[in-house]
Image (cartoon, rainbow, N blue to C red; front, side, top):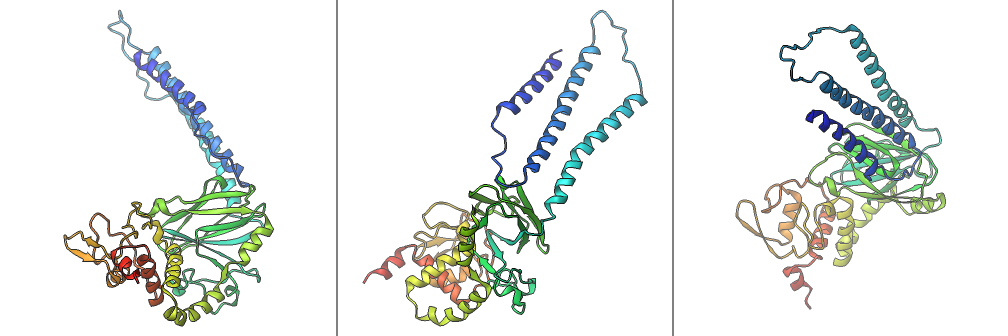
Length: 385
């Protein structure tokens, strides 16, 4: 009897918690309300089964419980009950079909965009987001892993004229036009990622070596968080971005301000001599942009706050203790060697998880200049007249 009462209480409390707790999904900001409907169908079917099974157990406990005064009563042995088995097979089949069918129809539409959809590519890499849009010609250029480098992270084919006017966004802020279908082409440069904007109810795994796709239509203007929904390493929680949904005119202005692939290639050629004669401040500003584009800021703070990597505030000029007990003075040579081969020496208290970046000499100098600009004994001494 006590077990039957406990099961009834569990059912009542579970159902009551479901309706009383604020677990419900956030307001939707896209056309995929059918995702919510599919989730609701799943919850209703599994919830009804949860209640029915527990109440069946309660009924069985009450009906077939041991009764005093009947010491010779024996349990009835019934190895087969075809009628009950057919009922269970039928109910299970209907329940599974009701769970699967809506999702199959929704997913078929989810990966089949309308003809007027705006194409956008998302590239995931530990632990940063990059985005690409077609240029005025309206076509995305072809890509290949053979062309991938830190100067060409998307792997755009330099010989493809369709890619030369493609807009490349290497900051974690993305803008999208409201009420316009968006087709997302998702790729990963290293490990499994997942592009996810919770209010859009739209997400897709990003698998290395594959191009996955889905589409959605933003329906509410605003700023929404971009998350990675697959555990992609120790910096996973910091792999964040922002998507800004705005009117078509504002989106067009923002897109026109972005750098194209052709402009980036020209800037790369022109930047080398400019950096050699440029000021330290200009080099540090370039390093700041690079740190954001490469995802360094996901693991290293510049305000002293703890993250998965050492903070850059006051780093330059200090003495670091290594995992093997040795010490090292943080100067320019140390920073260059550490960035080139981060696993050669491990700082005490931190895991050897920093990926290796194939940086050009100019990029390396800019990054070191930015770290030096964050302060430290040597940096402060060098700044004195």
